[in-house]
Image (spheres, helix red, strand yellow):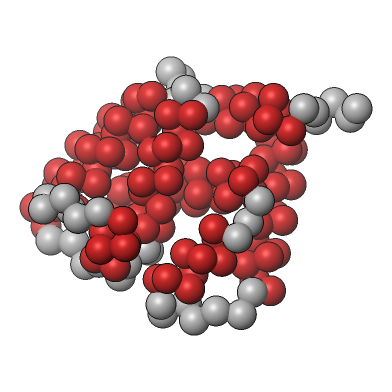
Length: 158
């Protein structure tokens, strides 16, 4: 078996997921079609895609960007994946961010429809900023690349 680094494994899976999304025929203005294309990825590809997109968004523009670019539709799945790979604090922060954007507690498709294309208020942005700070402080405590890469290697027995 090839000895592959976590970064290389994640990069390959992410690239594969992005290629499939680019080739897919769907209406990007409809959350359900976009969501379904992501759901059709393999489990490792989907795990990598949603975690990488969440991390890129939050790193670039905070949880406000994560939700306003509509990646927030994957927040429940992201929480599940983060818990699965033992990134518990990261999962808690994403969960807390959901309560900021979804204070009435919508679930499933109602939640996804609500957050797809959401425009956040200034008070929401300020509350999400506290999640941004907490997320930034996890950098040395929960290395998502290592946790995700190690989990995937075990999952696919590399």
